[in-house]
Every structure is written in C-alpha cells, then in structure tokens.
Image 1 (cartoon, one colour):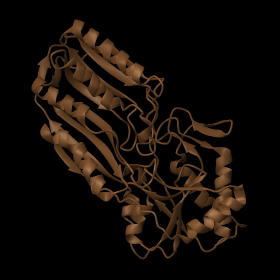
Image 2 (cartoon, rainbow, N blue to C red; image 1 turned 180 degrees about the vertical axis):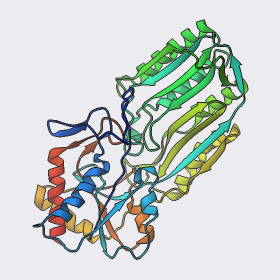
Image 3 (cartoon, rainbow, N blue to C red; image 1 turned 60 degrees about the vertical axis):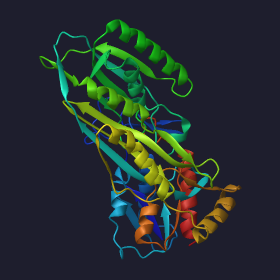
Image 4 (cartoon, one colour; image 1 turned 135 degrees about the vertical axis):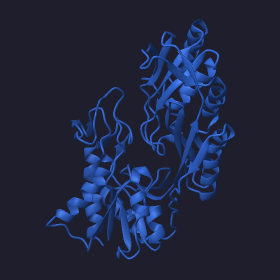
Amino acid sequence: VIMQAHLDMVHKAADGLNFDFNTQGIDMWVDGDWVRARGTTLGADNGLGVSAILAVLASKDLSHPPIEALFTLDEEQGMGGALGLQPGLLTGKTMLNLDSEEDDTFTIGCAGGVDTLASLDYTETAYGPNEPYFAIHITGLRGGHSGLQIHEGRANAIKLMARILSACGEDVVALATMRGGSARNAIPAQCTSEVVILDQQRFDEIFAKEAEGIREEFRLIEPNLSITTQPVKPEFPHISTMDDTMQKPFVLALQAVVNGVYRMSPVVPGLVEASSNLSLISLGDGHAEWSGLQRSSVESSKTDVARTFAAPFQLIGAKVVHDAGYPGWSPSAESPILDKMKTLYRELFGHDVKVSACHAGLECGVIAITYPDLDMISFGPNIHEAHSEKECCSISSVQKFWKLLTTTIASM
C-alpha cells in the first residue's frame, strides 16, 4: 500500500506581520478543538498527512501490509515533485492520498491547473518629489484557497484595486507601484498601490464613492475589509509612474480579466468545473509582472479558461506564457479501495461517507500519468481556511482520520 502526502506548505503571514518562514517556527496554539497559528498559515495542509505516514512507519504495534511512503515536494507550486516521479519506483497497487480537508468526504477526482504568467515593460513619466504622493491600501480580506473557496464570492484585492484605479482614471491618478497577493494558489487578501494624485478634489470624491460601494457589496462576506489611503514620502528625488497612454489599457485589462468561477460542472451538481484566480502582481520601475492560476476538471476547458485569462493582456501587448500545467484526476467507476473504505467508514462511524470530486489540485492525477493502474483515494481530517493565515485543524477530526487510516491499512 502506498501512503502519499506533500512536504511543502503555503507561506502566508497576516498583513503587517514580520515573519520569516525560513528561520521561524510556526507559533501554534490550541483553541478548544482547533489548532491554530498566530498570524500565519498553519501547515496542516499537508503536515497532517505527512505526520500520519510517519506515525505509521514509527509504530511498533499497528497491523498493516508492506508500506511504501511517498513524500513529494512543491505540490503548492505546481506539482513539481509528483511530475518528477519516475516509473519503476513504486510497486504498490493501492494509493492513499492524505491531502483532503473534510473528514466526512472521500475524494475520487480533482481539477487540473495551469499557471498563466504575464509581463510588460512600459515607458515612465517623471514627477517632482513635492507632488501629492499617496499609497492606496486594500487589506483585511479573507483570502483563502483559490480552488476550494473560489465559488464563495470572496473579494480579490488585486481586482478591487483595479476597480478603484479604473474609476479614478489616468487624468486623476498616475500609477507608480503596485504589489498584491501572496501565493500562486491563494486568493489575494491585500494589495497596495502608490500613486501621484493629479486632481485631489476629484480623487477624494471618486475614492470615497468607490470605497463605500465596495464595502457595502462585500460587507457580509468580507467584514474586515479595509480600503485606506496615506501620504508617502518618495524614496528618490523624482517619482516615476506608468505613462498614461499605457496606464489606461493596463488597468482596464486588470479589471476585465476573468476571475472567479468560469463554469459549473454539468455532470456533478454544485461542483465548479473551471475557474480562474488573479494571484500575484508586482509593478514598478518600468516593469510589471503578474500571474494567475486557472483550474478545470476538463482539459479542454482548462485550456479555454487559460486563454481567456490571457486575452486582455495580449491585447495590450504584454508577454504572456502558460506553464506546462498538471492534469486533473478523473473519477473511476470501479475502485476496490473506495468500496472497502465506504464499508469501513459506515461500520466505524454509523453513517455513510460522502464521495465527491473537488476543485482543488491533488497529486493523484499527476501520479496517474506514470502509474495509470493505481487504485487511488484521497481523505483527511477537517482543515479550514487553508492557504490563509486563518488556517486551522480540528483535533477530534484528526483522531477520527487516524482511526479510519489505521483501520483501513489493518484490513488490507
């Protein structure tokens, strides 16, 4: 039996928290039945899967067949570890992927994904250091997993910033810098732009109106949303901004780009088939780079949504590339491990388990390229708000997950 989990995590810290993931350990604490981290992602995704495998390997008294433990790298950055898996390494016929996040659900299919990367060199305009120079901050958003939470309508900070800049227009503000997002597979929870204000009265009026409208629209789902401005002291004797002939099409392209649910599945009720997330942006000093992650459980629509994401940027002359991506995992109609675990789950917990596909990316689809005959299933404990600093896991759910795992391998 192959037990599989990934070693990497999403590195996300709360706005304003100075945290070095290379040198600092996660500051965990117990909140009733939940384990949380102070101000950062917890790493339960996929640390709990890794820990469960290590616990099985370390045990002296568990009953199980021969175990192959497969630990992969870079799952959160494009499935690099699984994509590097070579034929002939594994001999097991059944694989337990321990990377799901609901303890009452077995996952038997998932979406594939592709990253779309764009860049643009632009002409700059110089302003003196005494011009009104302000930062626009959008903070306090929930962020979250760009696959599992994409259907919830959470706000994207980069898209909100584009909305404000578009409303102001290039005759009211000149865009100098823009920074937003934290990870390729996380919904951006913050974005900051620095602008020269060319018409203070109009800016004040437009900004107040737009900020008020956005807060009202998202007041229920984004209660901590903050949209503010503050004066900034220039670092250099002059301020360099994007030339106004490029600023307008650039901002309009950001506002137009597809973001959110692209298509619901016509086969599985309630399942997102295809989606897009504008993930990261960095602009300044005559160069801009930004990226998005597109997902779909259907290869043709994955290609379509990626091209749709790229289209407005290609229209303004940006360089756009798609990475190789990774495939989805198609559910199998015949799965001995699914049948076995459904029976065990009912015997252990007194009710039937849910069986579904998910819109997140799992490594099963990638591993199936090299090992197409593997019988695979994914399951795990309850983990909420993965890919955000609110990530947490349930202690009692981990106990339930461990009981199911050890019972399953003992029965094989």
